[in-house]
Image 1 (cartoon, rainbow, N blue to C red):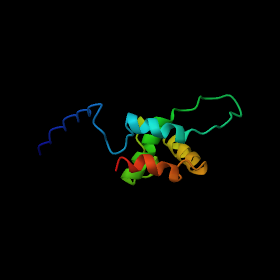
Image 2: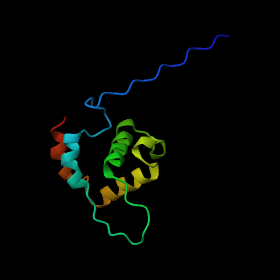
Image 3: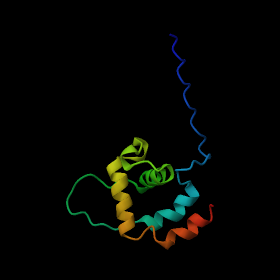
Image 4: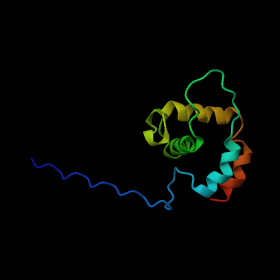
Length: 106
């Protein structure tokens, strides 16, 4: 039996190369104000995680159809990605306000 050669490393995409699950800088500039949730802290603890990688994780789940438990670590903890998605849904961040910015990129 012969073994197959190892797969070559996948080269990183150039910074300006868009992917299907990352918001580019121009889109993020329009989305960031829509996704802001003012939530007073009840007790001290870990600081709030930045929204951008979590949003990219949400896009990854929605585009791939994968389960929340399969979210890659590069987007942050899977539970935090899901919690932030739920927070955005409850506050209406994904309401029709997202249609104009997302409609321009289709």
